[in-house]
Image 1 (cartoon, rainbow, N blue to C red):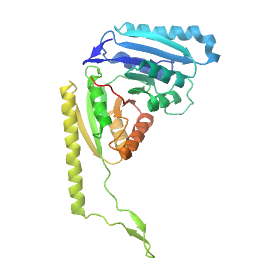
Image 2 (image 1 turned 135 degrees about the vertical axis):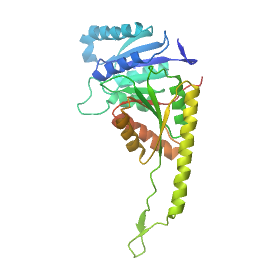
Image 3 (image 1 turned 180 degrees about the vertical axis):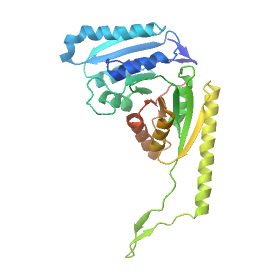
Image 4 (image 1 turned 90 degrees about the vertical axis):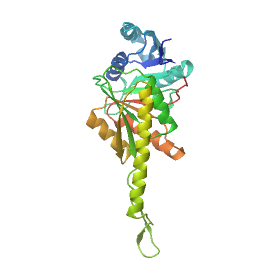
Length: 296
């Protein structure tokens, strides 16, 4: 098994020959993994597809040959059963440290943003999952989103191991909380009354403290990535996290977005989990959701 920065990559690639699966194969070809990296090219099929078994085997072998031509160790895996169930079962039994899957499969309902298999894999896979969107036009702009949580630190660590194409530009983004807005509550016979709220001086001091902490987080993240050979540039924004991130994705034409799967605490964990789901569905680019990264 090949190493990259001391880390053994073992990759599970979903390939049902859909447009997004082909994009996933193309993206994988662009990642300069070490020769001999282990890749399983996986497909599950329904009983009513048995007559197409020979075609499916040929398609998997074609993908394997493409990867072998780059010096990678690729093997096909074709199994009978429901795709989501079989894909997750294979992942749990074989413990890859990266899953790469297309955003939508051949049987996806027209108009949906992420197919059922990809959605379930992101939710339940035991390792980082890279969801690839078509059309794929290369990896020129890559952005990591961080909130300083343990999950974000895992994402930084995993990014340090992940080989990126030469010339890819790397960004690190942190989003500060939205500016506080006074809330209204029912008064005792006096209509709605504003809640007690800090004065403008206190608000200004709080904002400056948040900005300082945000800058410190970004600087420490940039330093960690630099040590791992991944120089990057920082982006600091304030507002709704999903809205701000997707605006930057659109403005800077981000090709790959990287995020952790949980936030700072149980409440933030729910928010960050919700955020990662939103990004997978709506960011409009490929998204890598990082979880359960083994040490090393």
